[in-house]
Image (cartoon, rainbow, N blue to C red; front, side):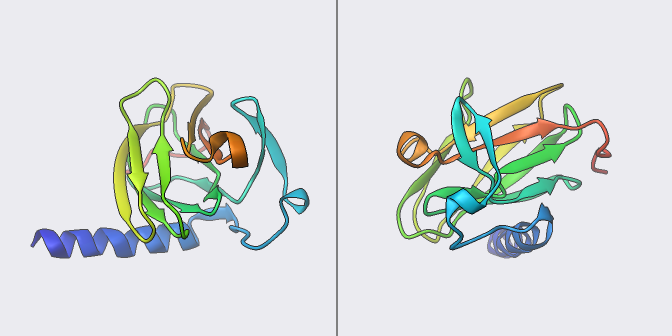
Length: 149
């Protein structure tokens, strides 16, 4: 039974990562051609933005960026984030100021419960590639997005 649930979550993560974004993930595109934003003091290429409207969402760690990079959601909403490593090397998902730090091997799937901040942004990064590749993203509160049911 647990295996079926886990397989269902893996399938859901793949669907959410592929379909939930407001803008598509861009692979193989030179970073200069992507929009950039300053997150945690670094200029970060934005590989997709997603409006989180369900209690479960997905983030894929690629070599060396997150997709989507920006997740927007209703303030204070807690979501289960399915973290998949679609890259060839080990990546990590760290939320500063929390106990959340998940190493994710190539092809692996991990989970983290994340609560959107009451306002502003909650940044995350890969502890292996934060400085060398600006592998950084953010959860942003957006009052225009309805709370998931």
